[in-house]
Length: 423
Image (cartoon, rainbow, N blue to C red):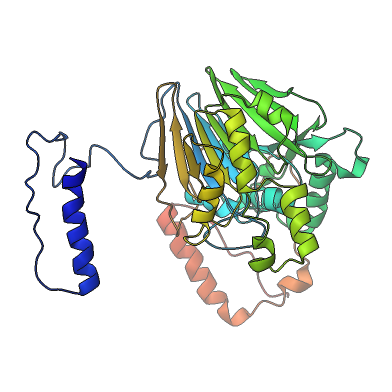
């Protein structure tokens, strides 16, 4: 049967190469009794989808869905944001692991209400793993989020006090202080709180989260101080997520037999000279002393023996992927996916299904699931200085009053444009 299937394919290739205009038909008849799937119609929805359309599929009570919202590197590109994986559980939990630069755009494109995505776990504080944390935080008030972010991040373990997650979030608050203060009273600022849980990054198999049957542990990563990998367990299933790390024995012990093992797999070290324009000393340091290359990823997965492996943290292009695959296959022959942004895994105890999501490139804000408030009761209200307001162009005042009248008529409100010339 295999040789029969090759004939039409070869014929089609030949036509494409030669540019012939004649039609091609195979001399081989289709085998009788081929499988036919029921439920297909020219007008009804397809019974199965080979891609994932966010928001269209229910999640089973004992099912996990994981979406790669950032699979790339610190080098910015529209095709791949930096590290970020969203884990959705059948009990309603949605947990974000890392939030690298550019990844909030992908999360937003899923159309999920932001009040459902407030729990964030940071493996370490490099920008390609937490660079979009400030963005997700500050944009909440403009995009329907009313709840604070809950953030788990490394601290302690002998690091200086100013290196922990709490110090980082304090810095975010200072950086955006102007926007925070001037928004009071105008927008729903309840989202502008961050509840931070700082855990000791140096502890092994350390439980940092235990709620509703979901347990998350950390293990140290070999990637400077203050770096970890995460192990999530729920309903008898295990998801392992590495931040940045060299191959390490804690991973191979505690991620053993994970249902999905998500681990970095860098391009070969020479690529950091030829493609990223690093000096040779920089290239060998980055690729062999603080990260895992694809060849070592393969060996790590051979030791881990997951149901399915996921390689991420590399520029996944048509000319780079073959070399990554070749390096991985030198020592690992198990199931593996090479991540791109939008790749989706549906996991149950019986099956792991891999697809790619169709992301909305032009989204409006997702629905708000909590009643929004312009200003929380008793909250502060910022007022622009009067001399600035008196700079208004009064020739446009009649038009502004008309705009308010039309708005009031449409929404049955009674707003009045408050600015008037000083007497």
